[in-house]
Length: 315
Image 1 (cartoon, one colour):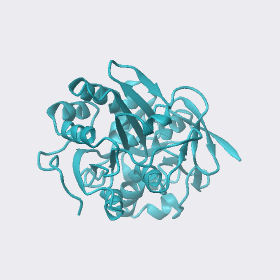
Image 2 (image 1 turned 135 degrees about the horizontal axis):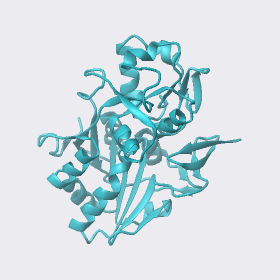
Image 3 (image 1 turned 90 degrees about the vertical axis):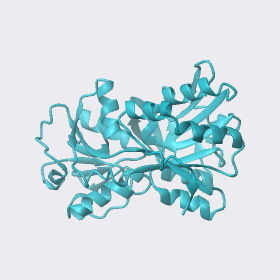
């Protein structure tokens, strides 16, 4: 059985196994960047042959073109960079168990892996494939609502209202909800009311009230624009990006500490099994540069400190 799903304006067919297949248009979660500016989309086979392979937490998708092009301008010997930007839990499964994208096998040995949760890197340490990491950026939670905020949502406590239809990242593979959104709801005593303790994806946690996305919380703006949802937990950076493209959404700030800004640190490290060890080191070094940090900040991310940007053993 197959069901249709939409993400960032492109249509996807979602197989019952949860594998997303590109049905039309460019698949911007799988990109190959070439020195000189050419970008290929959806060439999964490049995960086996690019000169640098990056598997990164998907919520930084909007940064990657500018970031990688700047990296290549400073490292022109790295002629091809393959970048995958999907939820880090899904990536971890690809690395540890393998998987297919668009019907093609994807490499299990990227050069670099990044997640919004250090626990994922600890699993790779336990498997003997990663030993060091750094925190390179930060983010925070915000509520996405329709343009003009027609439901008058004032903050996260309003998620307890009975008149709101909500769209949230699924708790199975999306770290934003599994590690942070769920914790925020628990902090407010709203977790069970909002989710009914459901653990599923592409499903109604509560029929007609709370929807869990299939594959990525970037599905939420479309649901809001179509009137299928009133609010959803996202990263603040995704609201900034959506508004840049004229999408009909707004953001409602979540105050600290509920926004988890004190906990959300993006952790990254090189895999010992990667084919391009020297290029992986060059990329990790580049992330500590002012140029890289300034590019991330331009898209709404919070810069890491010098101490965080130093490689250290995974605990």
